[in-house]
Picture 1 (cartoon, helix red, strand yellow):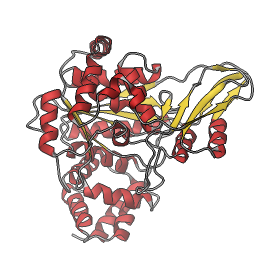
Picture 2: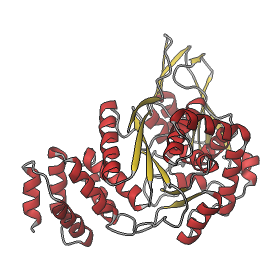
Picture 3: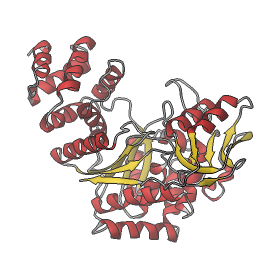
Length: 433
């Protein structure tokens, strides 16, 4: 078998067999296939696409290209959740304890943030003492004992995907639905999930800005799940504006605590309950979506979900005092307001610009090696559909810098304020199962 022949075969629109895909993934992972040939193959996939069967073969080949996590020692159906990313996406911090309180094991591997997209591990490490690195046996023991653990991804999980993703990033082949779908699902499968709930974002602040492209991606991933024996559901959700009000690590932890207390932002609460209801059904703890949603609402009202967060934090070395007193979280030295210039109504908030502004304050990384400031970020005071008066507060910057005029200007410019009223965009845009 020769790589040049497989490149030509895909270039001409033909489907590759499992053996041929295994050859490509194994050869590229070990270095036998050079970057220039893999680049040519990725470009051929970009233009010619892949069949559902090909995508499933590629996903499994990448999933088993390195270490895999064996969760068989954990009792029950392990339901994982994945978001395609956005600004203010705090869902994992709320979902992990909430679903655990329902008796479903949540064995979650999460990543760190890069650029304007925040990372779950960074957010959790804003809690004093919290350890995201646990030995796998303790990780499994925590899930069996308290039903939840959230750790960083292992170093050798899906090495083929890591190499291919880096190559796609510099060869103009990132926006290929077969390659995106297989990249995401290979990590979920390698992490040992029995069932998967996907939060596929769409809108100006999302990777897939067009709703139809987001739907195609969701359909591709759900089909991969079905073809690989994992029950999978995808929720399409709006990311045309930041989710919730908080953008920044400690600020988002505080908002997660408020949500588990039952007083969080409406959009964040609704999305968490929507995703969680599907997780509860897949985990066998509810007969249907409606009863799962109601069950999770009751777990928040009763305080059981908040207690599950305390248990998760304590088990990983964190200070549970933070849950009762969020003022113990890192706090920035300065609060700098951003005011509206005129009366009107908020028609849009450019989520990506808000995320970039938070990164400039130090809340995100410009490179993988960058240090981040866990205390800083942005608290929005107005969302799409809200009325606003001239001189009224649009957002508050939490910063350890005083020279932030560029950030103030970026946040101000992210708001589109017009004379006419408008409605809040729909949060849930569809469901693929």
